[in-house]
Length: 240
Image (cartoon, rainbow, N blue to C red; front, side):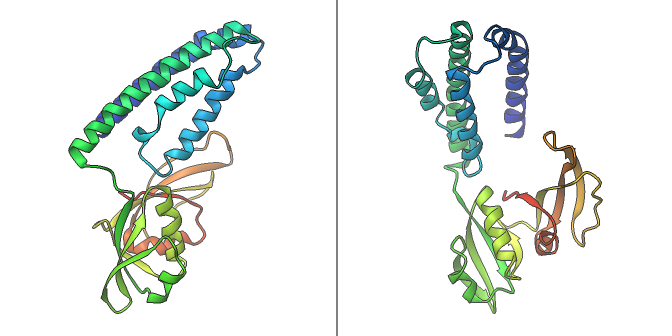
């Protein structure tokens, strides 16, 4: 999975980068650097895609609908016609290829893994049963001992939100999806150094839109998640 997706994404963005920095820049310059309808439409599709993949696999995004909307929600003629039609052609190609590619990935994924569930399961302890009435995203599956439960939680970004809410009650994860190690990303100041009571620093990347911050990637024992959540701006807890 990582080889297929990593290779295809690398090729996709290499091609897009080459095109947008040549023909794309030329038509933008000819159009006086002013966004046309298609530019605004593409920006909205990108925003919708970014929101979508917070909760569902990327290959389920409706690129066919994006293609259809490009031709039905933008006019056929208008100011800066060259830029307008260049965008229509390029975005049509982009959305069309994405739709076919994602359809193939979806078929392959379902054939190998089945339909992707939007829930995961965890074992927790130090959790009084009363917490289930206050945490809407956490559902008890069964009790396995005093203050110890198997629970059902949402996946993707909703998992991060739900896990932080659960940890705020002082409950403790024992296993998540059968695992005892988990990866976490956080956004910290550029001069931040790893001094946490649990976990291991893996690597960091600069935040390109904020010169004062960097994104750090940590490997953390599932049981130690509570020890790092306080005081650290957790961005994402990867839920397998």
